[in-house]
Length: 530
Image 1: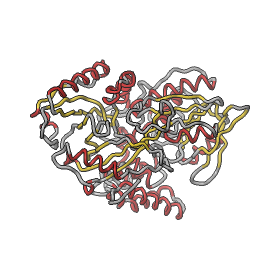
Image 2: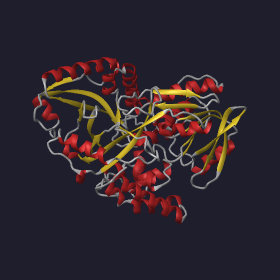
Image 3: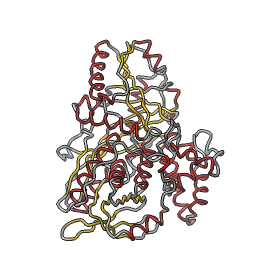
Image 4: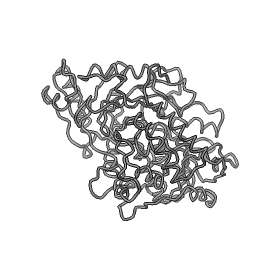
């Protein structure tokens, strides 16, 4: 989509709710507003299918906003032998760089080596990575001697290092990409609603024919008819499956990954660091991201979680990342240096559905599409990099199941909402020009944050932000960049939201309290436990 055909003003919430009643039967109903659900909505809408997406909370409010912020083939998956996953992910990387250049950017990664044999080993593996990318390669991997390594990563502890390997992948802003996908789906005729959880499935003759949804803001319920229903709820997938069949066996194995955010001076420069193997068998990243450094990640089985929508970093996970970082950086960050800490749950498919397995680090990020006897389609697993491919495959399956007119996939070359015609350094892309026209463009939210009051108004007017948390966590990334600074903005954001949406006093008080609790969750304190 080019700038001239872009729809700037999406339907107001009451208009979208009215569409639930006006539409007799939707072609495609998608449950879940994360990466896989939004990707499916864009695909279905671009084919011309009447598409409805419902999200229980906010778009990307779970795992899809808590990733490592990478669009990559996956060096780790190459080591595991997932050649097909790596190849397809590298190809999808190319589509994203072309279709959302305001949100996805090439990034150089460096693997340090202590021995010459390590340099040869990593170099050989990355040459295979280059070959799998083929014509989609960003640049060839290259060897670095010790001097070049330390020049590229001046914060790296030089002890025992003999050089390294540089290779290329891409970085993105996950929550902002989710919002761009939502806007793209709406541009193509879809209706996308947040804070409208599905509380039941409708059946006729043993087949699913729709869903029962409840407005989280008003309590109003809607019976929604659809030719096909897609469960794209990530780690909540088993809950929706049990609305179909209460005796459904668990499909997913929850695995937690956490990240820490510290100031950029711990790893100066514009290149990322990859440690190929840590004590838990994972890779570890230290990545420049929006003026900070992102440290991650962990892989911790979490069968103990009672609430899948509120994972918290564990003390031992924080200690692990700080301990690992202390061994690789000249200046080791401490708890006092952590600006933000966040956890996400990976919706991993267990190959044997065996809950007795103790590790999730070896599980594939490959996705699966399952169809129940009553016709519920569940898409599970996967990762951000392959969201578009997942959407294509699940809509291919849904169209056949629902008897929809066959239409080929349109998303490989579909530019996402906001895609600029010229290089742009704003996550709003071509819409950044709207900000000077909004009140508060010259008033920053906080000196430590790169956001203005106008961006808050933009989020409310054009991006379906409904709460203070939506704005500070996902429309901006304030909670992720500096939780303490973001906490001090809660009152100011609430005041702007009150002007724009005029919520009842009790609702405004409730969302302000929710934002304060969110701010506390992003901050690391002694004795904090998940």
